[in-house]
Amino acid sequence: MQLSLPISPSKISTVFPFHYSKPPLTSHFHSPPQQTHVVTCVNSLKSTGYLSSIGRAIDEEEEYRKARAAVARKGVDLEGYSIEGVSVGGHETCVIIPEFKCAFDIGRCPSRAIQQNFVFITHGHLDHIGGLPMYVASRGLYNLKPPTIFVPPCIKDDVEKLFDIHRSLGNVELNLDLVALDVGETYELRNDIVVRPFKTHHVIPSQGYIMYSVRKKLKKQYLHLKGKQIEKLKKAGAEITDIILSPEVAFTGDTTSEYMLNPRNADALRAKILITEATFLDEACSIDHARQHGHTHLFEIIEHAKWIRNKAVLLTHFSSRYHLEDIRQAVLKLQSKVSAKVVPLTEGFKSMYT
Figure 1 (spheres, rainbow, N blue to C red):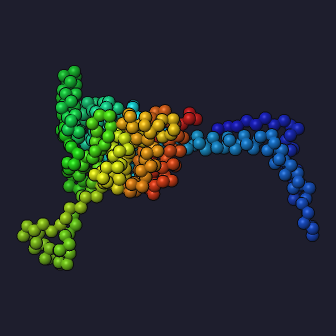
Figure 2: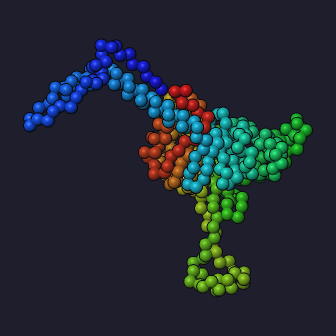
Figure 3: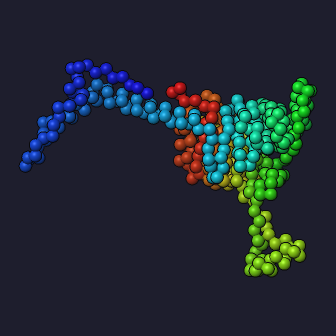
């Protein structure tokens, strides 16, 4: 950003005192005349507004630099996971975690989602589910194996009808494994990862998902045994280990903040990463307005911050009315209330300076 400051020739010597010279050393500590001249120059600059103009220009340049950096960044690295995607309230939500080979919701099917083997649908609104037929068709086009798509049980029949319509319209095969997964049920993605839905509160039926890592731990009664003794028990068919589930990532989808107050959702608030919506960020939209539309206001997350035990919080689903600068200010407000690292997913948003 460039700033043009009109300076007349008569003022050049005042603004830029090139003829200032170092005063000779003396035994007295009197201020040299040149120092008075510099003070006069600074006061002159202040009175003419040049310094304030320069200050504003520097601040705007810094904001612009931050905005450009935010636009260029396509994802975030949190707690060992690379998370990317787009989530703009009412437009599109698809959050991708390559380490799990999964996408939470599918939005309009961004190209990055096609490589993911699993999709977890939180509810039936188009900005979260609209790209499903394209996702399945694209995987077929690239000869990728049929994906597994998880949906709330109450919408499974309608999702099947959606695929039947597209099969008929396009006279194409759309191969997939459609799984109805209810709150409280567990599904094994692989031997070290399972997923469980949890209850959320939107204007239509909805649910979030928690990804758990799975590890085996030797039972306490066998800790004193040596290797050969443990091996003997295993050969005898004894169950010598406990299964330990650790919540890694929780994704809310669209919901009011009520999910934060449900004791059964405690794992969502102690997972390493909480990916939660924050549709509204300021006083322009009230908390009541957010609740009526089945969404969460930033002020509610701040109010319930004491329950957050996550190591990182990824905020998503901001209203399209906001700019990057608004989002950054919102992050700072929440960051001051929690020990978790707070990060926004900003792809799709613009700076107020562009």
